[in-house]
Length: 301
Image 1 (cartoon, one colour):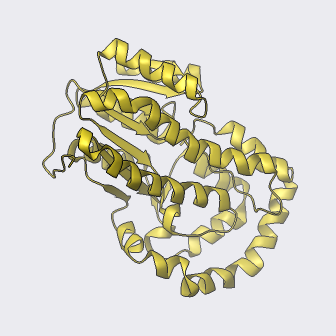
Image 2 (cartoon, one colour):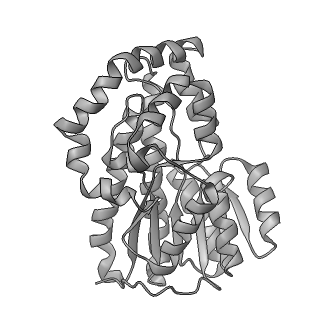
């Protein structure tokens, strides 16, 4: 079986590849990993921002422009990092998007792209990196979400993708255990990134809905605190990361959260919130609001 330990190991000298690394969680995790002595490859779709973060980290780090939904591009990014660093120890599949829209008002393209980036992109990242990670008995961290075990109207495709990503990680863990590779999934709730702030500012109903969510499901965590939690996972190589930790209670009781009782609680708000949300989205451009959000956030977290 793959190694599992709660004893932190040093990241000094380890080669770490992070997708969605131009801003937000990915960029902050890159900074913290580099501060611990790791060599970091930043992958994303915003070359100016990637170059800026890489320059901030120093000459021993690198950046590669690549779309996580392009298998050839991801294979090339992994090959470049492995060539420069002499191999890979850790890969973090962080790239993701979360356009807010209902199924009735979203464009088909926006719904499909959300699944493509959040689920297919993470799968292709793991697939591309696995040969190099296996050589060093390394670690794969998949950034899922608390949405994997909760529901929120307007985020159907996002919830589906994150639930699928968690299950993908569970299966991948079994498939690579004999290689000595470990696999973890991370489940943040609401991280104070550009993506979340922009959506709250544009859609008052979305913000009001979040404010009514119970306990940690309605809480906000700083990008720095989230990156700290992810960094600990890279050192301990555990199976799950919950941000904040109290989200783990909801994961344990996920059937209650998404079952009949939880559905009734959400439905009471959804009867009025969903029509209002759809009106706000229409005022921002209708179904194209979701589609445009996809393009703006292709590498943002």
